[in-house]
Image (cartoon, rainbow, N blue to C red):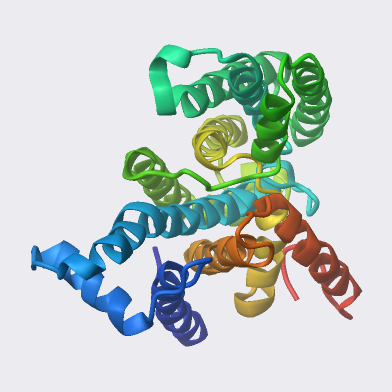
Amino acid sequence: MTRAAPGTARTCLILTALLALSLVCGVALGPVRIPLPDVLALLRAAVVGDTIDVSQAGAYRIVWDIRLPRVLLAAVVGAGLSTVGVAVQALVRNPLADPYVLGISSGASVGATAVAAFGLFASLGIYALSTAAFLSALAAMALVYLVARSLTPLRLVLTGTAMAYGFSAIAMLLVFQAPRGEAARSAMFWLLGSLGGVTWAALPVAAVTTAAGIAFLLGKARVLNALAMGDEAATTLGVDVTRLRRGLFVVTAAMTGVLVAVSGAVGFVGLVLPHVVRLLVGADHRRVLVVAPLAGACFLVWVDVAARLLAAPEELPLGVITAALGVPCFVLLMRRRGYVFGGR
């Protein structure tokens, strides 16, 4: 990868500092407020193994066992979704594409809804929902791939959209047939995105998958630039378009499946954040793919904070807040004079 431009490096430094601050604030803020100095002291005690006072045991459990894994997972999901959004928009050459355009999210919702409504995979305990969601996401990915064998942009979009409607209909049918009202409510809450009940066990797979996916896409930044110019131009530059699209499809679908399995369907992050990042650093994917994960991580951490605080002690679904922020933001972006997909 080429050396980052000064403006991009400065943007990354600012976003990195903002992300560190966001993570600490995300741990401190909630229905139970914990002062920042106490949060830092408790985190230090957990990392280096210091002892804490008995009176701080409750705060320690909130900080280390409940909020920190949740905040870290919010950062991972935000980084992953924004990065996948960049890749999918290049993959299908469509500015309205997002990580869910391939139908993977709707496929995952079928498995998750079956768990919430009917207790499928109950023997897996707390891992039942994420396991079922990931397995159904893989099944959806395979089905979309088999139907859209040529992997042309138009075929991918049409196939993914059609499959998404079909999977959503199945999920809604499962919710409608749920034997208990609370089960239906839980299913709907997950379908709108939630990080409630997150534990440390959910973090490693999501973090490793996201990091590996980002590394792969950064390695393909140059060819993504060529692909954005069209298949003929990319072929002229020596790019094997079919092979590239196949690899992008597998990586973005796998990342989406893993992220949806741990957080539900969080909309608008992968749609809006790529456009915001392009306004900051331009259209070059070598820059966009560096900045997008940081921007997405910061964004979703604060969305999760808002979800915990706005209706405390109840929580709002993440998708409600991302839609409330994403719709006006996207409209303003589209009204910006001179803005076109892929640049200023």
